[in-house]
Amino acid sequence: MKADSKKIWAWSFYDWANSAFSTTVMAGFFPIFFEKYWSDPNDVIQSTYQLGWANSLASIVVAALAPFLGAIADRGSAKKKFLIFFCYLGVVMTGGLYMVAQGEWELAVLLYIASTIGFMGANIFYDSLLPSVAPRDKFNYVSSLGFAMGYIGGGLLFLVNVLMYLNPHWFGIADAPTAIKLSFLSVAVWWGVFTIPILLFVPEPSHPDTLPLGKAISAGYKQLKTTLGHIRRLKVIGVFLLAYWLYIDGVDTIVRMAVKMGSSLGFEAGDLITALLMVQFIAFPAALGYNWFASKIGTKKSVLIAIGGYSAVTLLAYFMTAKLHFFILAAMIGLFQGGIQALSRSLYARLIPRGQEAEFFGFYNMLGKFAAVVGPVMMGWVTLVTGNVRLGILSILILFIGGAYLLSKVDFDEGERLARSFQTN
Image 1: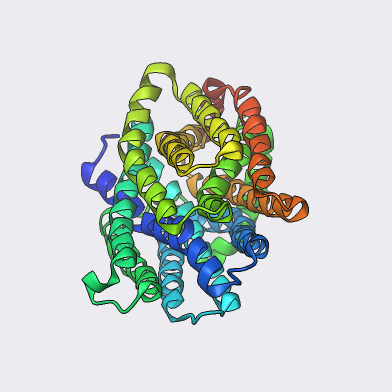
Image 2 (image 1 turned 90 degrees about the vertical axis):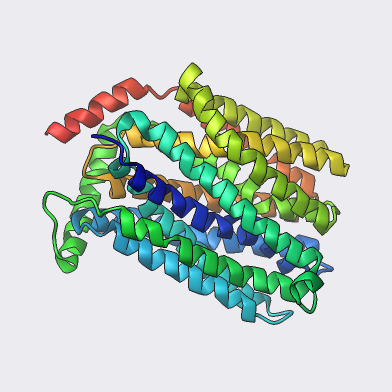
C-alpha cells in the first residue's frame, strides 16, 4: 500500500485540531481557573481532590464504553461517525465553559467532564484510522507527525490565549477572567473547524462484512467477547496493554495535573503558563526527532528511554523549590512527551490484526483511560491523606517503574507474527 500524503496530512491535522483542548483547557487554564475562580481559592487541597476526581470520572466513562464502541465501529464501518459525535460533543461542552459564572464549580466540573469525554472518545476512532492511512513501515513517522502537528497547533493557539490573558486590553477584552473564558470559546471554534480535513479526505475503512448500525450493535457485542478471547490468546498484546496501562497513567497524570502541582506549590500563574508553552514548542521538533532516534536504536528501546525520562522528572519534581527547577522539568517533559505517545501508538498498531483496528484500539484507549483514573486519584488521595503535595507527586513513580518492567518483557516480532496469523484465519 502506497502512503497517500493527502490522507496522512488530513489525519495528522486532527491532532492540530484537538490538541487545543489538551493544551489550553486540560493542561493550561482550566486547572488554574478552577482553583482561583470556580472553586475555593483558599483550599488548595480540596480543589486538587475535586480536579483529580473530575479527570478520573471522565476517564471511567470513556474506558467503560471504548471497547464496545470500537467493536460496533468496526462491524458498522462507523469509525468516522463516532469520531464526529465525540469530537463535536467536546466542542459544544468546551464552548459552554464560557457561560459558567464565578463560584459555580459544580457546573464547571460537569462541562469539563463532558468535554473530556468528547476529547478522549474521539481519540479512540482517530487512533484506529492510523492503519488505514499509512503502511506499517510508516507507522512511527505518521504517528509522530500527528503528535508534532498537535504540539505546534495547540501551542500556537495557547500562545494567543496566553497573550489574551496577560494583556486583555490588546484584544479589547475587559479583564483576565473574561479572557480565559474567551480562550475556552476559541478552543471550541479551533477544534471544530480544523476537524474538517479528516472528515473530507480520510475515507472510512470498510469492514468485509459491514452491517447496519442496529445489527452492528448486536454483532459488536459478540465481537467484543471474541476480541477478549483473542487478547487472551495474543499474550503479547495483553502484556503490552498492561505495561501501557501503567506507564501512560504516569504520563497522563503529569499532563493533567502538572499545572495544579505547580500552583499548589506556590508558583505564579504566569510561570506555569510559560512552562506549558515551553513544553509545546520543545515537543514539536522533539516528537519528529524521537522518530529518527527510534529508527536508530529501535522503537521499544526508545519508549523505555522515554519512560526513564519521565521517571527522572517525577523524582526531581519532589525536590523542586525554585522557578528554574519547574522550567527545567518542563523542558525535559517536552523532550519525551511526543515520543512516548507517538511510538506507543505505532508499537500497538503493529500488533493488531487488520479489520479489527477500532475494537483493539478501544482496548488500548480503555486501558489508557482507566490508567488516567488511577493516577490523578492516587495523587489527590496521597496529597489529601498526607497534606503534602510533594508526596502525591512522588507516588506517580510507581507507575513508570511497573510499566517499564512489563514493556521490557514484550516480544514485538512474535506479536506481529501472531497478528498476521489471525488475519489469515
